[in-house]
Figure 1 (cartoon, helix red, strand yellow):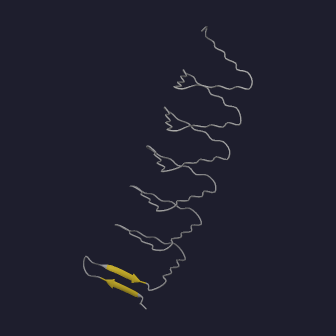
Figure 2 (cartoon, one colour; figure 1 turned 90 degrees about the horizontal axis):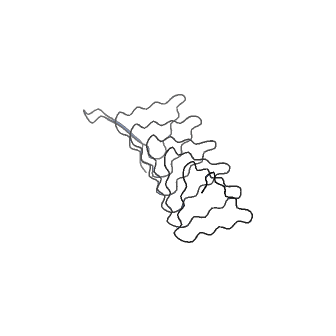
Figure 3 (tube, helix red, strand yellow; figure 1 turned 180 degrees about the horizontal axis):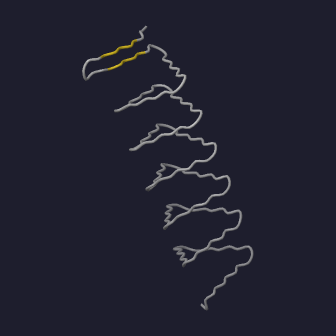
Length: 161
């Protein structure tokens, strides 16, 4: 069995406080805890890591944040989630992507939108579909176009063509 160890070293340019707990290490702080690290911090946990915060959690990172997860990444937000990206946003998905919205969904795009689909597209709309185009609309079909309507087709134009 090992021992617990606390070492204080004052050798110039090698000053160090070393703490070794052979088994468990517990800290209880009855008020505030402040930590200032003026250089780097490295932390390694070989088992589980659990953190519980009862109130507010804030992180401010002035440089780059790089998160790598070897298995699953799960996020559960009870109320709302807002993300603000000052520049561009890219999402790369290796296999499938599913988006489920319980109620309404909206999308605002200030410029152009381009969608490329390598396979087929299937849309199922259980209500009405309304499409407003303020400019021209061009639809190019390189194969056949089949339109099936169970009731009427109404086509109107304000032009004399």
